[in-house]
Length: 351
Ligand code: DP6
Image 1 (cartoon, rainbow, N blue to C red):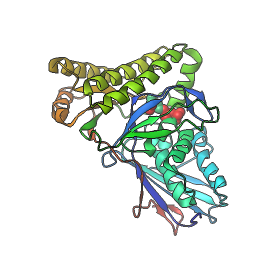
Image 2: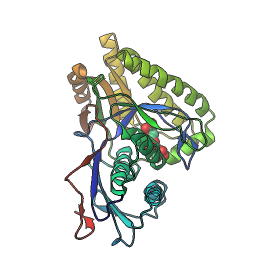
Image 3: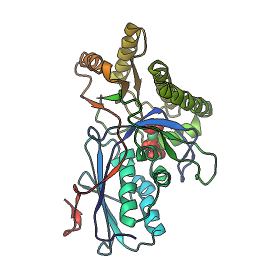
């Protein structure tokens, strides 16, 4: 049963892809060309909190991100938010919604597109509407809002299965290892720019699929890497895992570059970080860290706790190039909060 006029709040965190998703075989259902693998980050370091209320008093749906009202007619928002309308229809609820969402990290392209934004939104909506959906089902709804969001429904190491069915019913996220399996694995985030993304992922992927014939062969190699990375993780073989992570990031960025018009997300600091990590690995005589970049210039350095200080030291040496570093462990996925509502019910407005 839906609970009208009651605020539901969820907190969750972004994930960083070790083996990446880049390109859709179905744009509406958000079906990828290859499986992908990610780490859900700990929500004490990077998090999104999302509150939702459904009420008959709301004559129109409203969305606030970081305190700012968003236009639901905006294409980028519309393409993602329809999943809440679908959940509301499926639950047979006739009421408006008010959503307020807040991030504790810089929003890259209007956080409606962030994995943690969508993952917390569907988690809170599931509770408010009394839909009773499983995490697997929620991952398939989140996927249609933003592909990478399906992985943020679970904690630890998560695979998004590529699936083969046309209706998307076998393209869902699944936890492969929980956050306690190899807890020493951490992500050092090095912020090299706070600028807005030049090309949103959605448009960039479309451009790649349309203009770069190499994308098919990348999808095939990424698929194999997912399998290999799961084996490396199972065996806690960091050396092998690091090779796969760096190779996949480099291959995706090469693919982007070969797209017409060329898409380049990395900046000079990103390249310097890549070189610094390769140097550290050479000096150590083994891989102690792996860099990876999503659709932006900020580095994610995957390593083990014991090498944290060494890596932070190397980053400090790059004076002025890195704006901020954050160290994130692995998280357990979105959870519903009892307090911490972002909505003032009396005013039907964000707090
Ligand atoms: C480079 O999930 O943001 O981060 O499905 O269009 O919303 P949409 O794209 P999105 O793309 C993420 C791309 C990536 C790689 C990854 O996270 O796997």
